[in-house]
Every structure is written in structure tokens, then in C-alpha cells.
Image 1 (cartoon, rainbow, N blue to C red):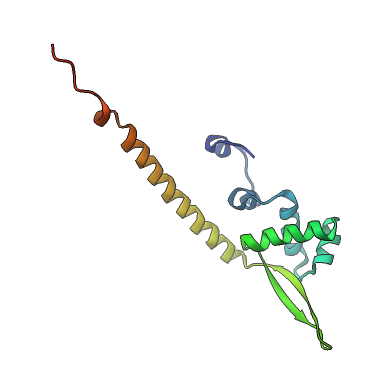
Image 2 (image 1 turned 135 degrees about the horizontal axis):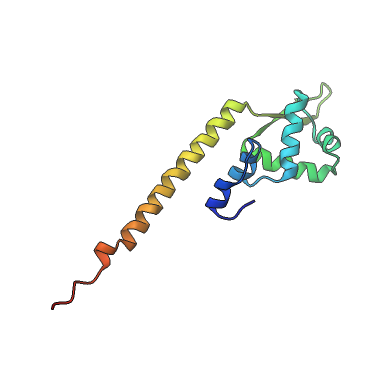
Length: 134
């Protein structure tokens, strides 16, 4: 991932890049998300681990990052005899897009504020010394 904003603007980006750009998600996180979208059915951690060919604990950490970012949802399934397990499904893409748009708007406002602070702090007209008398 590029370090500067100008490098980010120059690189080619695909929509899945938003997962990394907005939330710092890893390649495995993107794989898990894409697998959940592809299957169209809720999956358990064990099923996710099998699909992405990783250990259960590694898949679990990816799922936790996706949950925290709001890209997936966790649902509890109860057994008739007692007990339960969890399954995971993607969050509605419209909700995720709305959340990312809100985050982008907040970021844009913050950057505008910082740019104004920079201008106020370094404005040469305000900080220049009076002209020397001839």
C-alpha cells in the first residue's frame, strides 16, 4: 500500500481495495469476505477456514476484523437439544457503502480543517515582518 496520498491517487484501485484503504484489512480478510459473498449462505468458522485453506484460529481472527469493520454479521443458531453455534454472512452492501461514504465525508471534513489550520499557521501575509524603513 502506498504511503502518501499522492501515491494512493496514482495507483490503480479496485473496489475491494476499499476494504484495505478504509479499514486496514488484510488480504486474508478480503478472501474471507469474498468467500462469504460467493457462497450466498451463512458459514461457520470451520467452513470459512476450509474455504480459505487456513487454520481455524487464523480464519477466526480475519472474521473478527471483518465484524469490527462492519462488513459481516454474526448470527446465533440454536440446537433443539440446547447449545448453539455462530454463522457469519456479509452485511448488506448498501449499508456498508453508506458507512464508507460517511467515513469518507468525515475524513474529508477533517482534512479540510487541517488544511485551513495549515494555511492559518503559515500564511505569509500574517507572519511576515513589517517592511524595513528606507
